[in-house]
Image (cartoon, rainbow over all chains, first blue to last red; front, side, top):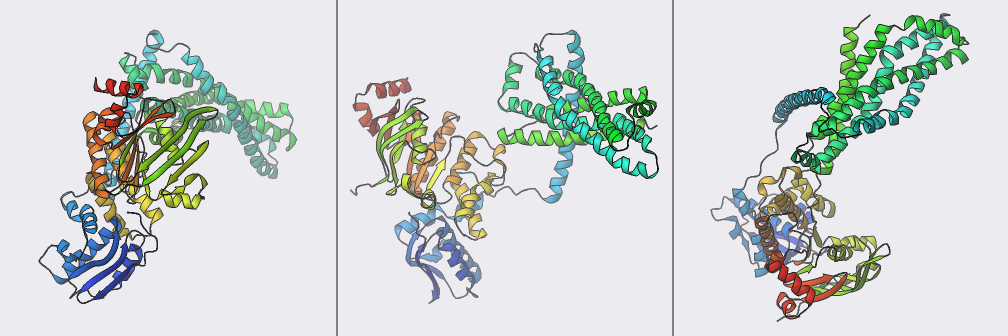
Length: 373
Length: 248
């Protein structure tokens, strides 16, 4: 069975037959296939002669059989194509028999879905997923409310642990990105405002933008990437390794035990992170106001305080809480939906982050329309 | 009767994980057209021996000859040429989850041959037919049961018509019936394709079904190499205990 790379195989036509010489294996078939396709007419050819053929493997066997099938069709022959293969020895006959395509005729493989079938099944899948996500959200809210009074089935210390993971460990990255965004926003605006002598309005622009939009949005996007992915991958890994089933078998509700602590932590930490983001972002802008536009900090503060309203602050806090809930629900949903082991965990994490960011922006649009000044 | 030649020859093999010696002084020949089973209790070094033979782990000392070539001294290209004649069935199938079964089997054919797509397609269909999995050609591995995954992985392992087929715990995680079916399939393929088969397992039923020869490992040493009948007559305490527990 050891295949040879340079077998010097030949395909010769003559005397009403195709004569194959040398080893007919995976190394010689590519060249023989090209030579075979140079034959213009298979008519008057009635057999494939293996009298000078050497070793056959699965590729060679299938190649020979394909020639026989083509000869049968070209000449409209009545006999089975296997009878067109002649002068083979016992070993070659054995190989031809094992790799015969004739056995495959009964078992038609399932064809992949067509383009429109794929669209249809994707729409149905989306509908089902949406419904499942709603059911999960209802479950999480139920257990989150019930859990306030009923401590049974909760993991001790999990709220603190999750708050540290989602909140405290997220502080540095949220702070750094917020100060950079505030800095850039102010820098871009400063150049324009300076042309009109309206430098002082940088405080209005920055304060309003950070309070109503940027602070919450920056934080939500960072938390989606950081905590959303971590929630999805943690739950997905627990699902794959049957830890969630084990919890069920211990009569512990996995949603109550695993997801609700994250939900509580997100409810508390998300608004706090947003507040920090707003303050730090405005501080970034203040640096530009002071060092680039030569405004005094007190003038900046006085201008800023005029534009910030309590209503905007409350709206942002409510909005950021919704962002946090969406991130937990989506992360948990993709984690619980996981199938197919390690690869599934990766997919769940990716889908979770993409969907979270999309949903956060969607919620932002809804809030912007509802609370349009 | 024609004397069988060894396709794999392990000489004075020592394998280590860090400072811990896993295998010591292993000397064994795997003969052509035979099913050789490496067995022993958990942690005895069965999989380590297989991984050393395949060079997935480098031995601390000793040599491993496959088709007369010492793998420990071969260049990367020479080693790859040898690998083309070896098919490996991993414990969990090790199918690529991101692509379907057709593409999984197509990988070695695409990478190592210049076969035209029409012939490749037929080869894949025929190989899947051999493992009774024609209906699953376009399914993803995640859509298959454990037994089906093993069969699909077997189809991939035999894609290039290997001379040697190595199987790591083929029965692991399978029910007795599926396990027996897989054993029959391996035996059938071995007879049809005239392959030399090397299997790592500790499933006694499986060993009885398919083994021509057994290599018994115990705590990193080779206690026995021969047929099952010879093993039973050898009066080696550990082997007797192994077979006794299995027959219980």
